[in-house]
Amino acid sequence: MSTNSSEHTVSAGGPPSPADGNPLAGAHHYVTMKLTSRNFLFWRMQLVPFLRGQELLGYVDGSFPCPAATIAAASSGDSTSATPASVVPNPAHHAWVKQDQSILSLLISSMSDEVLRQGNSTTAEYLGHAGVLAEVLVQAGRPLSLMEQNLYVIRGLRPELKTLAAAFTNGNAVTLDHLSDYLAANEFMEGRNQDRSHGSQEKGGEESFLN
Image (tube, rainbow, N blue to C red; front, side, top):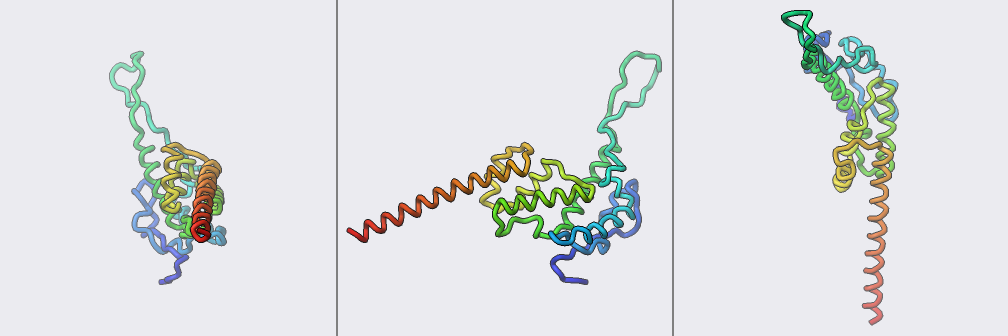
């Protein structure tokens, strides 16, 4: 088994269909390469056959769209009644969303830390890279909603920036460009304040020396 930090093992223990439950549960050994900024095509070459083999590709390429959230309840009694049919939750919708989120989790887990965490990158670099990653997911057939982008991006920010970002979004979805502008402006103002504080300290030291 490889110990390379850029590898991750994902597979399934058979060819179950979506109707059989979650075919990703207990997955290992099918997708061995984690996505980095340099290997998208190789990563996709492993991921697509795996999803196709598990009959899950329709979730990400749009050929198996999400069913309606509600359906008409089965009618009973007089079929000529003018009473409008009631609606009930659609079990197929719930099952689809559950499976879709499992696939999204698989995609995220198959990405290296390099594409998920800020590390020593500047905020502009990190959010720019996040934008590229969002485009990669579009190309892979699984675009993220703005809210999903916000959640994953904020989770990867350095601790001192998480609070700012969370306050700015306040539970609302914003574009990565708007989030980047906001955080960059705050970093700029913080830098100005630090420069002023440093300048005041230097001036005070000079006055003490001269006196």
